[in-house]
Length: 122
Image 1 (cartoon, rainbow, N blue to C red):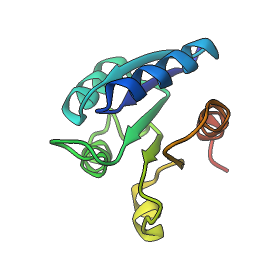
Image 2 (cartoon, helix red, strand yellow):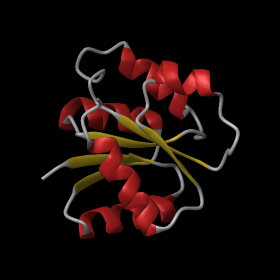
Image 3 (cartoon, rainbow, N blue to C red):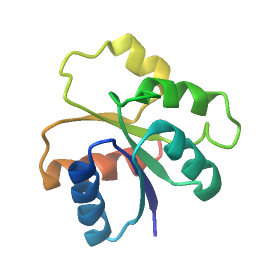
Image 4 (tube, helix red, strand yellow):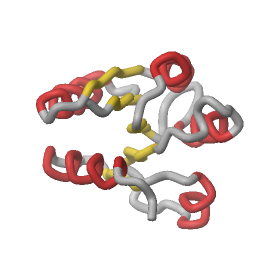
């Protein structure tokens, strides 16, 4: 069973994502901020991280930067979740993210994005 960590500061969205991923057969844990998410990732070693970009404290970009510098976290792929439609393509390439899920999204978009992000890169 694939392990997915959802880092999202908005409680309702965090819960909806969690419920839908569990219902699709994934083992899911959540964190409400970047610090908690990094600690959970260190201990739990998920197969994929769903990461909100705009959060209080550590932003999603901050979390990605810290992950890149950590040998135990650098291999974990990330799928970004954001309401921002305009993202810098260069920033995305440098960050190594596996995709972007634009809010609001529906369950089928969520599951398709997760499946794609879990595929090994070619």
